[in-house]
Length: 219
Ligand code: C5P
Image (tube, rainbow, N blue to C red; front, side, top):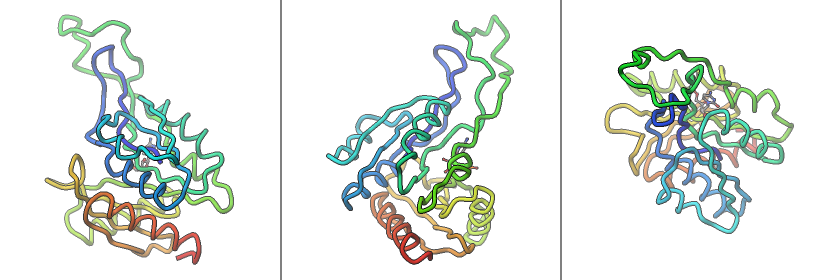
């Protein structure tokens, strides 16, 4: 379970990042361990106090910083994983090069940062998926309404090729940095297989119910 948000360095003191706290991914990892799974939790910039919730004899925690580091760690851990829940917020782009020394206003180089695209990690996992392996993606969307959220989820699940996609409404006052969450889980037949809301742990349990059901019945 990759969780948290990557930081892409601009110079030694600045980075491009996002508002993911890693709470949902940590809850997903912990819920799996409580159900008896052996879990590798890969955290990108998750606060110690949040990571503490995942401490469990069956959880191995690996810390990474950038999308490239996350990609390497995920590729390694997914080799013998039955399920990958890609809950991390991965930067789509990184600065083309990170300056070795702190950039200053005087350099005039802070007004435009050239970006290059990061690999889509989940696309790589889907391309390399073994038979019997389940790949679950997350999507953070700012949707107009419930129907729009569902449509976006269906389109994104198809585009990503994941078995299940958990769609998260992150509009004003929802999703990121909060203890509660609400998710739609879209399945392989473009149907909503579950809707969950509540604490991030409750949502994580609903997600594992959906994953278990998909793995046993295909629905
Ligand atoms: O396209 P979008 O970023 O909304 O897709 C989100 C899903 O794709 C998440 O599961 C996220 O972890 C994954 N992702 C990825 N590599 C990227 C960007 C997103 O694996 N470079």
